[in-house]
Length: 450
Image (cartoon, rainbow, N blue to C red; front, side, top):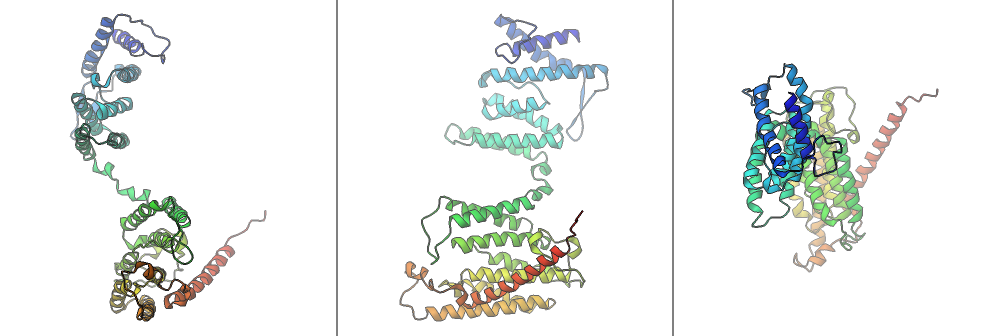
């Protein structure tokens, strides 16, 4: 042990000899041959000493069990930490083409292996990925997650420029990295991963960007577009991300969250004139198991969608929840179609919704409130369809005249259309209900005068 301690102290002095990070060096190494011999001896014989003194046994799970019940093991911990620190410092000084993989364990070693894996020659690349794989198999979930993040970051960084010279290395990195991700698929995509998206912070972030883009890319009062904003290209990725959130967990428990997502997309439609097909996601909520089973009758209070992301367990399968979803979905369908109520193509755009809603009105006889909302909505949609057909019946231009098609009913106030008038009435009713709920909530707050 005394000889090993001296060897590691000399190794430390050699590793830090070219820098200023270590001031108190015990050995001054001036001969290059002595330097090389010291480095070679340490790297060659320290692993041999460790394997003999602390033999490891590989478990069926791939992890390693070390004989760590001796006093020597406890006294070696500090020396090993010093060794890995020195090894990392030495690796940072050696040219990438000459680096070699030499150990296992330790996060410092992992970081160095990641660097070598992403930027070294083929032989060193293979040694680095084998070392990373050995660590990953034996590591706990926290270390495994750190390795996977590091591998992915290194891969993306290396893929920044793709040329005839870099593509082979990028493909090799992708193939080797995919093997690491298959070691533990639960770490690659944890089941609770959806919680990173299904929370208030994420929803408020989406809503914030919806507000920013709605203001930045707002259309003119006559429906025409002004000069494109620099933020215009962000609309598409925001829409795609929000739709991905909607689709992530399509069960009825998360319909409140879906309402939030659809509302922020509706804001984009109303303010920017961007066409976003929301009808399929709303019809999917009606054509769901929630309305195909017999609900349980309870005396529960109606839910306030503004403060929910998920249905409370007390309301699951209840008539109160089903009726609330029916009312909110019908209103959002009305609001969605009101955005295109003046469009010259409204009769064609509304056909999918009309066809599905008429079918639903005959199927869901267990939910009278839903059927009532559907029938009212169908009536207003058909009235608006007939209204637009009458207005365009005597036009002197066809669909090819884009400018005149876009100007169709541009001067007509939205509330003058059948859907617009109905939406205005329903909005007033909802505002009154909202005010009543707010008053009730404030009354229930106990004010402490002490």
